[in-house]
Amino acid sequence: MNAAASATQGAGTGAVIEAHRLQRIYQIPQGLLRPPARLHAVSDVSFSIQPGKTLAVVGESGCGKSTLARMVTLIEPPTSGTLALGGMDAVHAGPEERRKLRQMVQLVFQNPYGSLNPRKRIGQILEALLQINTRLGAAERRDAARAMLARVGLRPEHYERYPHMFSGGQRQRIAIARALMLQPRLVVADEPVSALDVSIQAQVLNLLADLQRELGLAYLFISHDLGVVRHIADEVLVMYLGHTVEHGSKEAIFERPRHPYTQALLAATPGLAGGGRRRIVLKGELPSPLNPPAGCVFSTRCAWATDRCRAERPPQQTFDGRQVACFEAQNIAAATGDEP
Image (cartoon, rainbow, N blue to C red):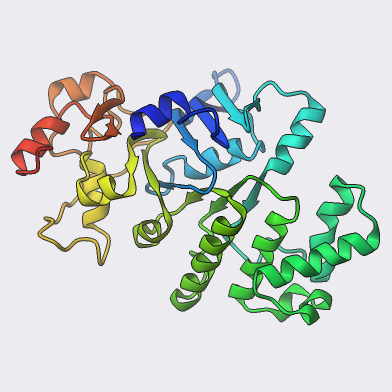
């Protein structure tokens, strides 16, 4: 099924998560007697993820990736749109339903040095989730924590140690173990390897891939590193200023990017700019989300922008097996000699 059908239909009833036209707007105070400004952090984002699959969300800093992660993990509610986890409405769920839904989705943070409580032993950190959310006894919680440490490649003696006694890669393994203690169906990984050395990144990515195969996990993988995304993703969603500009399979996005912003991202990534891909230099700064462009959000930096682009917001349309929000996608493909 292509990206267009996935976004609109949830790729079937078996999707772990289905999001449709999610939007998150913040009210920003501007001082006494002045109305608050509206910051559109995420606008009209739709996607779904099947069990055992990975959707990578990429884009510049400030594009809305982390805000999207907070909505998916139920830390923040969407301003509008629908969000379903395991077929259950996550937007209008009551307190008891939300407690169950929060166990279904877990988060792996970017910084393995700041995400673990330095005053607690590793065993206590892992067991705390079971103590709060289950009725398991002390011995059962201890056995479950030790088994999870082994599953992520750590030794039994690590159970009694403190976080400061581990390397960055080991700490991230512990963070992954903590995320899996409640047997979630979806793991949101927010830049999970960006703080690690390159050699350690590969080990953690391989661990995530092994766990996905073993447990059938769905991943929402947020990253700015397209080299990492190419290694782990099944689908890629490209965001710019809170909007989805392109969404499709990894192969389609990396081999034939159709949106000018996606092309610029790939051209700027070492190791991905080869194969005859021309260098693209974006001019100007990222517009303020408090005052986005009236038409296409990318129009102020796009070499292909027309008067229509500056006046109208391009809708998501199916082109070459993916969703693209660009009026000029067909013309760009023809001009570059890469028509579908």
